[in-house]
Structure formats: C-alpha cells, structure tokens
Amino acid sequence: MGHATYALAMHRFANPARFLRLAAVVQPWAAGIAVIGFVAGLYWALVASPPDYQQGDTVRIMYIHVPAAWMSLFVYSSMAVAAAVALIWRHPLAEVYARAAAPLGAGFTLVCLATGSLWGEPMWGTWWVWDARLTSVLILFFLYLGYMALVDAFDDPTRGNRAGCILLLVGAVNVPIIKFSVDWWNTLHQPASVFRMGGPTIHADMLWPLLALAIAFKAYFAAVVITRMRAELLARKVQALRLAQASQAAE
Amino acid sequence: MMTRKKRRLYVVLLALLGLGTAAALTLSAFEENIVFFYSPSDLGARPPGDRSVRIGGLVAEGSITKQADGMTTVFQVTDMSATVPVRYTGILPDLFREGQGVVAEGRLGPDGVFVAREVLARHDENYMPPEVADALKRAGQFKPEVPGKPVYETSTTGDKVHATTTLKQ
Image (cartoon, chains in turn purple, blue):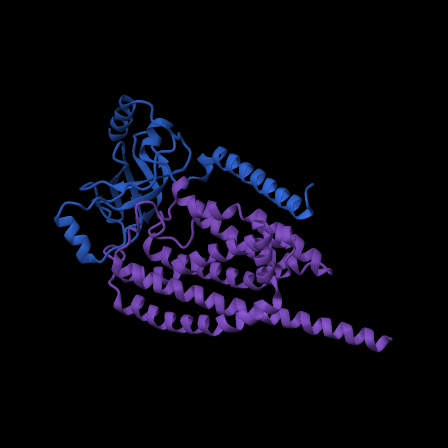
C-alpha cells in the first residue's frame, strides 16, 4: 500500500507532461530570484560587507568561489541520484535531467577552479598545488566532461545514457572525498567554514551575503536546467512527430 | 519473487557499497602519499633523511629573523609539540607573518635546519572583520589554529622532547 502510493508519486513526478506544466510555473520564479539574488548579493558581497582581518579585500573572491563550489557538488550529487533513478526505475525524465544539468555543473566546477586559482596566488603564494582538495575537485571537473562525452559517444542514445549513468554512479564516490578531503588529510586548502560541526567560523556580516549568493546560484541553476529540459523534451516530441509523419507517408 | 526493479536496486546498492569500500581501503593505504605536508612532529617521529618533504605548522611568535643578505629569512615552524627551524631564500607570500599557518617544501639538513625551496602561506577557516579580530586579540581569545595534524603517531612525550631538542641545536 505504502509502496504503491510512493510508486504512484514517482510516476506522477516522472510524467513529462506534468513536469512541463510544473516547470512553466517554477521557471519564471527561479529566474526572478536569480536576478534579484545576483544584484543584491553582489552589491552586498563586493561593496557592503567588511574586509577580512587577514585577507583584506581579497576575501571577496570567496563570494563567488564558495557558491560555485557548493553548486559543483550539489549538481553532481543530484545527477548521481538521477542516474540511479534512471538505471533502476527507467524514468525517462531522470536521464533528461542528468544531460541538462551536466554542462551547468561543469561550468560551476570550472568557475570554482578558476576563482580558487586567482585566490590562491595572492593568499597562498601559488596558483595551484596537488593537495587532496584541489585534486579531487579537478577530478570532479573531468567526471562532468567524461559524462558529457560518453552520453554522445554511442549511435544508440539508450546505450549512451546507460553508460553515462554508470559513470555518474561510480564518480559519486568522489563527492564525500571532496567534502572531507580537508579533514582526512593535511591540505593547503583550509577546512570548511560553513557546513561543519560546531557551526560556521565565518562572521555573520560575511555569512549572509555568502548565503544570498548561494541562493542566487541555485535559482540560476534551476531556471537554466528547466529551460534545457524543456528544450530536450520538445526536441524529442519533434523527432517523434517526424517519425510518425515519415511512416504515414510511406504507407 | 523479486521484481526486476528490485533486483536492479540491489545490484546498484551492492555495487556502490563495494566501490565505496574499495575507495576507502585504497585511500587509507595511501595516506602518507595523499597528505600535502607533514607536521614538525613527523620529522622527529620519522626523519625524512635526504628526501624533499613539505612541513606545515604555525610560524612561531618572535622567531622571524632576516639575514644580512636581505633575501634569506630564518624562522621556526611549530605544531605546538615540536618546532623546526627553517631557512628560506626568496620572496615570501604576503600573508607570511608570526602566528600564521605556513607550508614549506625542502630538505632537513644534518644541522637540524630545514632548508626550504618554497614557502606557501596557509590561512585557517576563520573569517571576520578586522575590528572583531582586534577585539578578540585584546580579550586574549585569539588563537591561530595549527594547520593539519601529525601523520605518524608520536609514541611518547620523551620522544617528542628528544625530537625538539635535536632539531633545535
């Protein structure tokens, strides 16, 4: 009984028509929150927040670097869950989501790596080191690229998606490694400041603009991933109609 | 009777469990190679000999001295249980100061002085406005955190003291 209602809910969610109706409602809200969040958050972070006691104004790179890093992990984790749903329950929307989210996740990871490098040079005295945190995030970036290359590497899209989903699940091992690398091993990268036992070690005047930008990043992702999923679903519909027309003409 | 969905669910869960275990075993076996730096205590516990290693700790208070050539700096790196004198010739990062986290790469000389080839600054996870830091300093509650932790277990207190004294000569 409980299982049946659960399965029903999953099917409802996975129904593309229902998804498209929901997406049409959510998308403008997400886009609006993203625009307001970026304008307000960037002003707050770059102008209105205090400098850091040891890093001075260079600390402002954090307001881009940290939300991008969070998104790189969040997007990959959500894609790995979608991959499991696609492999086990064969819901078509799960694969559509993973394909739509991949370039966005890769973009966030690239922003995280680039801003981290720009931040590392003035503070640490180096653009790059092979410590556990930096290396595992670079591997995350390659996982995104590998997934995008793999799903399009087969003539049969079903096989491409299957292979891509397996890669996503294998790569999910890297997610806790990234998160805890700074606790498990001595790294040049400092430990977590926000999501840690004992609460944030970042002053409230800096934490709030950071969270505002984190919301802006997430809303931006939601708005764009919905647009990409709609485009993919429409493209599939067009292809199905073309096939139907072609078979009718052949008769 | 198992449905196909249920079977796929178990296969995925088992595969993830196996993969996670394999990753955990591999990473814990290679801990020594994955750490970016060792603590000053590690130099005493397992002397690196002629190998180039990185050590990380805090720049000890009052330990920075500039040599006559203007380019060479001598300072001490401490993890609060062991301290190593470090000599470095070159430009130091802006954040380099007493009480600051630091990672130095180089070799431990026979005289117990660590000759660094590269010195990087390492900051901790605390972010605050300068006024707040000043207030904490005035209240005596400002404690810079020691970066990282020793990789090798230091067996006894006597051992640590021995390591410190030999390195300090």
